[in-house]
Length: 106
Image 1 (cartoon, rainbow, N blue to C red):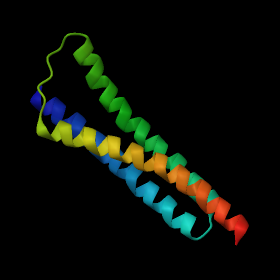
Image 2 (cartoon, rainbow, N blue to C red):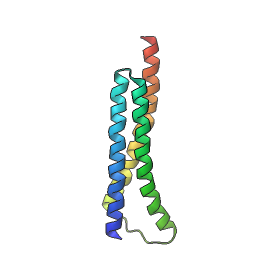
Image 3 (cartoon, rainbow, N blue to C red):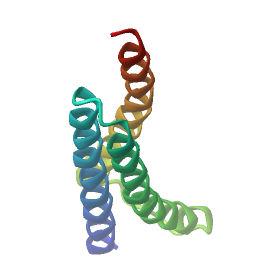
Image 4 (cartoon, rainbow, N blue to C red):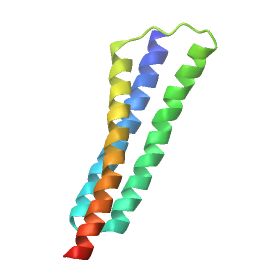
């Protein structure tokens, strides 16, 4: 099971890392007032987060069915990575709204 948990953890890290990169690309697009590209990048980031969440959900389903899950540090790191990226994406939507508002003022 330890190897399975590590594989799942790295899958979560990979997909949430991809999502984080896309969110930062959205921030860059916002700074250039390219709101369509920013929205596109945020949508792409959601697709990556869905993949990460699916890996997480599979593990939770195993746990719910009674399978013992040994918590490893890499899994804690993966969860942290996923949650911070999800939060960053939420902030990005707020920033997008602010950038749009500023663009109408300037």
